[in-house]
Image 1 (cartoon, one colour):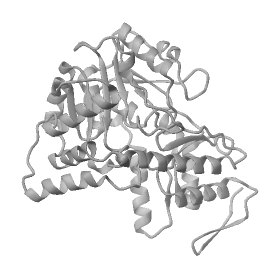
Image 2: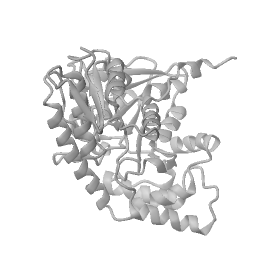
Image 3: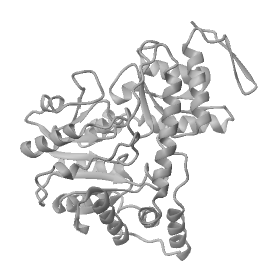
Image 4: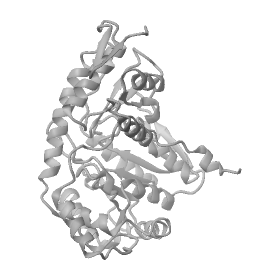
Length: 405
């Protein structure tokens, strides 16, 4: 059987695989704790549910325009004006089946085979494979100082004749760090001067802690014409806890959006009209749900960080936003895949290996679940790794005995 070269180069999504593994273990009745997840546990906003139910009750669930229904585009335009101080036209907006599809279609629109896309490391697991799906080449940019905070020099030194685009995700998945205003300003200026596309993955932009405010990329853009190569991506998945609704969007110049719409029209015919109605309800409805989620996540973060700091060998970097922390466990085990598998096998705690995000020795831990999962999950991890822990651990009625060094 012949499989394409691109298909052979693509790995399964490790985060989706973990979700599946967690579901299987739970179905068996195992006491699994999922600290690798990427979806808030709070419920979708009632305004979203009511909007979807009202549409469903009509029985008229039909095809939608490939770029999104007018009501959703209007809601996105309002959102862009409110949060980015940028007024755009309907032709500057395309709704997608999640922010992931918006990024994928943007890459398919701008990339030719063998062209390169740069993004800071650690990076979201899907960026490299999404670039490869276009026949292009992913170029991770590891900060030279070893931190999670890149400088413009880290981008500049990797730019060559094949470089076509830069992707910035701030606050960042998996580290949770928010890049500095200086860095964002430098990246915007650099991409404009070099005529590179800049994709801003802003899916977490309002989930910030410690009084931090979202950085508006448009504040630093000099080119605000229809020649701009800036593409801003967002969606309802994270801020509104609507991961399963799969609605995201892109804002860009009219030519880019027209081409993206053509591609998406052949891929999926556009997102479900029912789910778009739900997104309209969320965007136009009461917004307290976003702040409530943000406050809950900040509290969860504080609990998680406090627990991790009790480990002698763990280096932890308190996240500025998102619902992840990227902790350095290399003092215990350099091979993050081996460590992640050990935690699943011994105490049924799911984490994501750091190598999937471009850094070995780290684990991505999510704090978007409940406090009980966080505290018990970290307790189990400590029992596995800390040789000073008691030799026995009870998980429910099950007694575990340490049988490894």
